[in-house]
Length: 390
Image 1 (cartoon, rainbow, N blue to C red):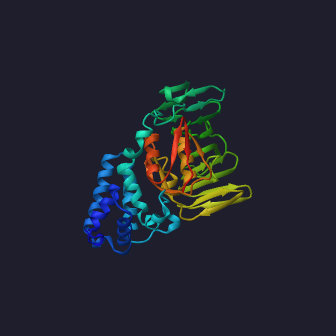
Image 2: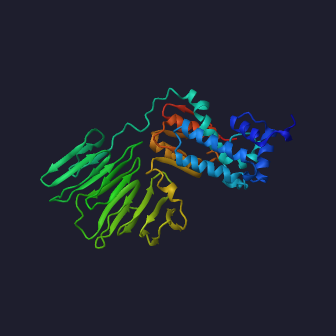
Image 3: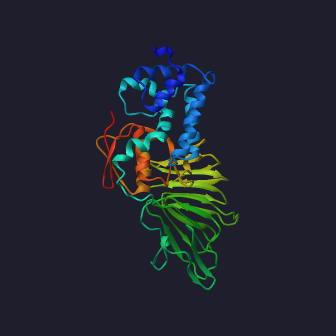
């Protein structure tokens, strides 16, 4: 059969199966680039079928991720994806001209075949889904309470109560003397605390928050490290101040925002979802409106008008979300969650990744998906050693 007579649906099925030849692949993606998907109902039906099957069979990727992947693929077949935004896949350079049109499709393949492709060589890794370290509440007297192993009222002294239940710490009573407590999360754990004023704070892995047991001053002030999402209780007379590990401050009256300030990241990110906040850094300050993000990096601060809100709070919703994210940024997120050390042999490969993976998936499953997208690596104990790119 001549190549030009092979139906496009058959070519796409061969691509998804991994059996397509180089010539067939180039023909398929040239067709996808030049034709509307609406001109071929069979193509659209096949894509939706693969999408639905992948969600049913591989729960390691979220339904929302599946919708994003499918949407990206449908967009990709109607217009060329700019080369600088494309997923750089590890394959011979002569095949890369059409890979940029298939960038979104790579993740569909990952969903349907990643676990089969790669977990065989790392199945013996018994690393837990989340780290085995403990979430700790440090009291004013230095005592440490391990919250993972205790439920109910962990402290009760008259009307002063500290309650811990279902991954949520709260202070329902009143205190006679103000003390400062610090809640800290380890690798692979998230925790929520409801502060004495009713403010809810979610802590990401390897993060901490220090706060008083009662807000008696003119300001409600807390200090954080790592990453936290805030839903601040309204109080017009007492502004809420989040001190970002001595590097910057966020001042609010009542609002929803996310702060990411890990020491190994290139900067501090403050993202506003609702309300208004004032962020200050040294002599600079800016007022953020919903949808804006402030980035503090190299002693400078800039404001992004249309921030990716979904990506900023993906961790709170239980997923890793990547949108043309650099490999080193991806691996830092995985390292915090799975308690691994990432080692690069040579320079960091110039790979950018897009997609979502549930955070309760195991390390083998997460790495398997990355493997299908061109990442070459090996596991040695708790080290993920990444080989140089082509």
